[in-house]
Image (cartoon, rainbow, N blue to C red):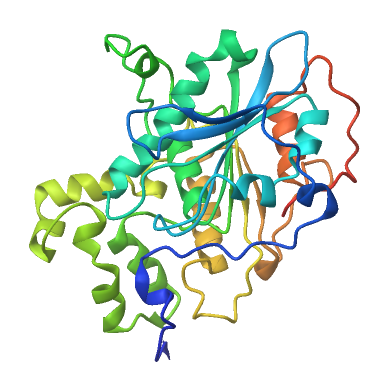
Length: 326
């Protein structure tokens, strides 16, 4: 057994950590300013988004970026830092980057902020020249897990709701996730690493405050019928059904670094295995385990979105050599 003997201070702050940003290319560093900034999509002060419009004479696809930061930090400005937004715009794909409530807000409420953002964007389809049937989501770390949750969870659309935003579909038509967590059920998370022969130190549970992650008060609450229901609602692999949209899974972490257990490639391998079991359409890039797409499949997130969302009507040609975050 491998034992993790210590955690750095930032590891002890929450279950999911701030992302380590990838190197920023010139095109990413020079991302254009959003056409719309700080647009409210919900009632909370954190329910805001930025929107970049792709020029098109017909409705465009949209990719919604969900930032990482352990559900405790980060903000929508990360979208312009880690995504080559200009390349998306050139491909005729509009882009949104969202803020959402952070911990100690319970995880199920945080995830529903993300869902409402997708619903709001669909609600704005006519005004913003959006094709609501071509919505993708993408995220890093915590935001990646939220992206997958939106893809796997049953649609939250409520046709009878008095709020017109909540009448819209919350499910993306495809989803991408980079350096994500296998599950947002803490107990399933620990079970995954038991299979990896990694002993999570007792302090891990204390620092995580697993009951608090779900708005609960005790370990007994966590294992009660109500706690089980909350955990099941965000247990990503067990939410997957055959009608799930196509997904793009990527993890650039090394297998030897067991201390990076929040982004270890075993998360990606566990999700890949589950996708195989259910039989859904996915692309996986997991270098640590020699997993890569076939030559005929998309090699980058942008190519993935172009394949499954298409290009806007006035988009310019974009080659496979275009800059893309991995």
